[in-house]
Amino acid sequence: MALESNLKNFYIADEQSIYLLSANDAKKLRDWVELCKTQLQKMGYSQVEMLGKGAYGFVFVGTDKNQTERVFKFSRITLPQNVRERLEEEGYMLNLLSHPNIPGFIAFENIKKQGILVMQRGQGIDLHELSKLRGRLPVNTVVKIAIQLANIIKYLRQFTMLSVNGQYETKPIVHGDIKPSNLMWDEQSEVLSLIDWGSCVFAQLDENAQPIANNVMELMSADMQNTNARLGDVYFIGDDQLNGGLSNSRFDEQGAAATLYAIASNQNCRYGYNAIPPSSLGLPKAFAQTLTHLLSDDTKANVEDNIKNVQAKQKAGDQFIQHVQQMESWFLPELKLQPESAYIPIWNKRSESKLDTVVYSSRKSFLRQQGIHSDLHSIKDAQLDKYYKNYLQGMGDNEKAFVAAVSRLSEFPIVGGFAIHWLPDGMYVDSNLNLFDDVYRKSVTETVNNIIDIARALDLRDGTFKSCLFDAKNTIHVERKNEQEHFELKQIPSIPFEVTHVPQMEEGKHHSYFEDGDDPDERLQLPKQIMTHIVALNEIRHTGCIIFEVLPKHLKIHNYYNLLDKTKVTEFEFHLKGILTNLKYINGIGVSGFMKLPYKDAKMFAYQDCRAELFYPQNPKLFIQND
Ligand SMILES: Nc1ncnc2c1ncn2[C@@H]1O[C@H](COP(=O)(O)OP(=O)(O)OP(=O)(O)O)[C@@H](O)[C@H]1O
Image (tube, rainbow, N blue to C red; front, top):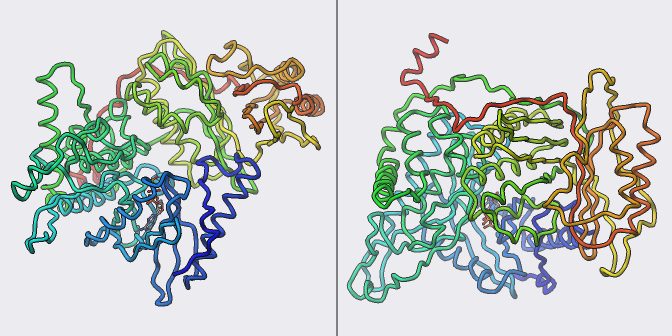
């Protein structure tokens, strides 16, 4: 296999939407993807497509001459050498494994600095995508996934390999990063595949916390002071792995429990378990209890409780692995246990093109009051939510779950926004959410309901949180050579807006842009030449947002507008244009945003600690008869 030398110019893709990259960066990314595809085609593979990308690599699929699909994982060239070498280690570990739920190793190629791991394809779509599409997965599917996960973990726990002295030795393996996006599910065959072995290591401890050593020499030479574990996704790993514990089989039980909880509740992390407990998800009681124990946190008030908690966790982990046969015998027809209706309205809209939603949240200070890292100030990006992952430590679990649920909204084609106000007598939500593809209605409804139920469980009685969702394809980009230059548009584009006339009578009061005063989270001060137009816009009946994101060489103006007074079209256009003609006066770096929402859909919610209990009935036949 020979790859051209220009492959060495691999480019680290920004995790942002491609529409938010500067023109140059977006081009580099597209070129890079094309280059990979061309190279794979030259190597004799046809039907080459990009399958996905992760923090460490880009993944493609192609078909070989025997009509067999192969998956290619390219490590990002701009990662440090020691991180890139991990792809080879990933290949080494994968090569040891042989299990029907693990797509096998084919080859590892190292051309110049570019490593490529070639492997079998896991069929279907990953569980993150599946739950986005279907919402909460049916109980029957969750249990089928649980059974296969338990079988994989059992196989890894009991893994043996031939040692140098010709004998088979127990060498338990830890995957270390079990999460929905690393599990492929084929809906036809109902087969699960565990992929991404990039965090995989030989366990240092067995499931009883005993060092793994097949002989005295091995025991003496083993480093039991330092963990060999890799950090998996902080949204899914357990406390022990997060806190640098020695690697052990319990890590994967944690990843599995968090995954099962996430797909059963339509969330993208483990942290919502207090506000939306496993016991509220309509799961079989025994299964829900196992998940509850496995997800519970290790930081109980006193040592005795902590020990008890760890023991209960281990017992639940063992039960999970051992009760596969029992789970296989469960009869779990799909039941409508509780109708799921949206807590707040979600309007249907149509669009010719596909949306690329970005969520921007303002007034996040209340989260910081809960202990969030003060370094947050140094981040000057409108997509702040995506960075939250790095700032989770120090926040309460409910806050983490809330942030994760809000950022999950960006995965759907939605624009609009919502504001949550925590007041002494209850929580008030004003919203304007417009969904552009009804396929996602169930999933979006559940996500929005999750946001609200988690918000109701936050220990807050005073505070406001605002979130605005816009289509990144409408973002206006202006570039400059350096910070000393002004931003200037050669041609003034128009900021698009919809017009939905709402008679004054119905419309009621509006949130003003300015009612909450300056947002303490926003660092950018806009010049008066722009503010005049923003103040004038505020007087016109509309809903929407405008966010200025100023970087040293790049200005992004994110926007979403819906004018609610058809008599004001010209005036509205005039002020939007006025904003763009005055960009040259912008000084400083940072973010500044303005959002306006209608009051008319305001809904009040009582506070609650957690969602009510709901189990799958012991006798589903009886439930069907009575239904
Ligand atoms: N063997 C495979 N079969 C099918 N799809 C795959 C396979 N390997 C990877 N993918 C797809 O590519 C995506 C990214 O792959 P992977 O998770 O291995 O990358 P990563 O950079 O290690 O990701 P992460 O950020 O999760 O660490 C997966 O979510 C999946 O959709």
